Length: 293
Length: 155
Image: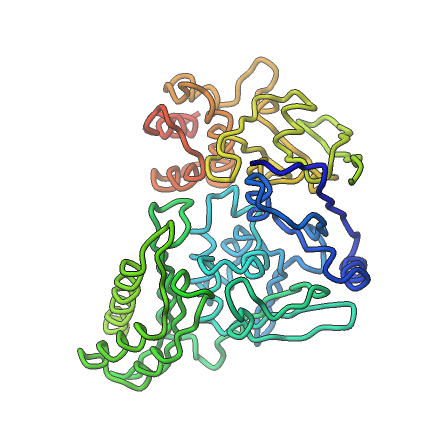
């Protein structure tokens, strides 16, 4: 049943400093509220137990995409539309733009934010696998200062994260591929859902790799919807790195992936289907590398 | 219990002052307070697009926007699309091609089509389908809606 709306607070601080002071003063009382595309759904369904929200939408310190020689910094409020429209992101981190284009419809993409997608901490979120494959780092801020957390260690369990109640996610940083490391990189992003538009993932796969002659020189693989958190599959990567692409390598990688992911039965799919699709996507990704040599 | 707040914004190019609870859905405030009932509620969870409106030139689902977030914003609803008695080219095309049947999805479809054509004046069929992917219709089977968008491009 629909929530009783008058019982909710939504206060709008004028600056990041003011927002952080509110969070610091009343520990755990306030939760950030950005584009609202997840929270408003819960509100409508009467499943939003927390009552006090801090409206961070439009805080200028959390907006914008900044490009330097070594990295791209996306403000936490960067929308899916802004990600798709950014030329450097499209050229160097295409999986992120693809994830953004497959998240909801255009109306959601205009409002949903990358930071919100991360801290909402759904294991089925579409951008985290791409961020994991690109070695993203998160910048967290509080009234006490800021700290950086590698994204792969941010999610610690189902809906559990390395972020304190007085902290806000300020930005997401992507290290750029320098000295030609991005050249010849194959980017492979596949979201599998019930239908093309709007659907939430059953499995989401992000892979990036570079060949050196016949060997897989560099490989990163991350999946969504197959574990309590979005996961970087380091064992699967190890089974591929430095290897030639052949049946033996593929079998070893599949075996590693089978132990590394932990899909479940739920309302969107089944354990068996998710496992099968994950392995098929891995194979499709690896076979694509042959063409990329 | 929080009090109602005062929110100043522009709706269809008119300055409006709203008094509402901060978490009230923009959809409800538009329909119930401003009586702009052209904006429809379908699913109430951002899947169907019936509640689409433009905020600062971008299409959004008004069921997912708490009204406190439109302070200072410029909102356009289906009521603000026609120029007095002269329909927008997209609206006219929907009539000519039978793009509207029961009408619940139509305001959102028209806004989504306008939003698409503003970015891309001659979209391919795939681009039209993608541009309208966030809007569900249970009557037309979509073909007449796609035809309407194609016709609107030719105007």
